[in-house]
Amino acid sequence: MGTEQRILFANESFYQAFSAGDFEAMEGLWSTGQPLVCIHPGQQPLVIRDEIMTSWKAILELEATQGISCFEPRVSLYGSVALVVCYEILGENQLIATNGFVEEKGIWTMIHHQAGPSLSSELENGSRD
Image 1 (tube, rainbow, N blue to C red):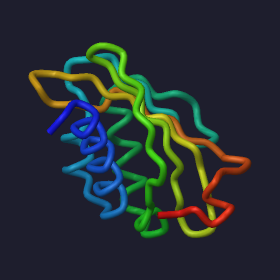
Image 2 (cartoon, helix red, strand yellow; image 1 turned 30 degrees about the horizontal axis):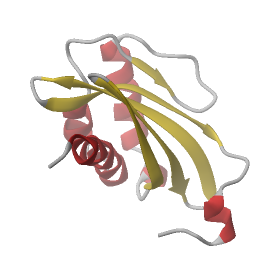
Image 3 (tube, helix red, strand yellow; image 1 turned 135 degrees about the vertical axis):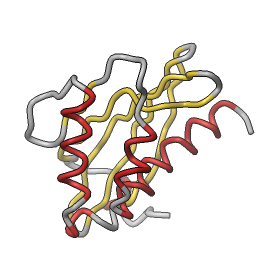
């Protein structure tokens, strides 16, 4: 599997854990050795791992967040750091997200997540996969 495919796999694993409400999987995706940032829509940035995990635990316990999907992920690679920009679809809501990953011992782990409202995209024009 090539580098871009491995990054996309890490990103998809994030959305699978999110969609399934799987806290243990979510916790395992985030780096334990790098600085982290997580910005949930309308919230202040979280930079302490324990606070980030507490926020995810609360979010994943909400049935309303289960079923989230990721569309049109695009990878930008910067050495051992990668950003994935994608659209999140949850019910009738569409967000745009940036997910950051770093390669640690051959595994891409999450270091950043930020999502916010998206004004428009190709998805609204019916090009959803």
